[in-house]
Image (cartoon, one colour):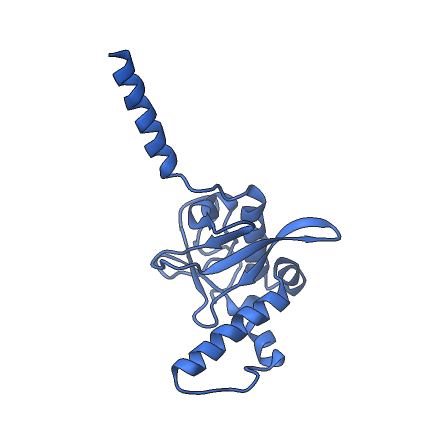
Length: 180
């Protein structure tokens, strides 16, 4: 009897753990929040600190070249750095709730946690409602100041992020801010 209960308990524990993927580090959630704060505030300095521009350029370039090839076009060298840089900025992002209302405040790490999953060593992905693929990819990078998470991949088109409306900060219009 005791052995049967022990086996049952062990099986339940294994099943419970099998459903749990690797945890998203708290500092990755904070990095995503920082990125979205820069987007909402249109703060270019904070935005640049939250992204790895060379990695984003390469990511976008690859997407655009593949899109061109899929449409029967071959572009030598791909898009220019100028064109790629125009795609990388706070204005490229559209943050909305599930009803399509614009967010006027950045989501909290608690709101982002259910949307993010570990994606290999040193990478996390943000998924939004209605998407099965990774929308935004953050990588843990080391630099002279230590290690931090930065945005390294994003879609080249339709950069709309659907965020949960419930939580500490929602899509409700903030007093004194114009809709946009």
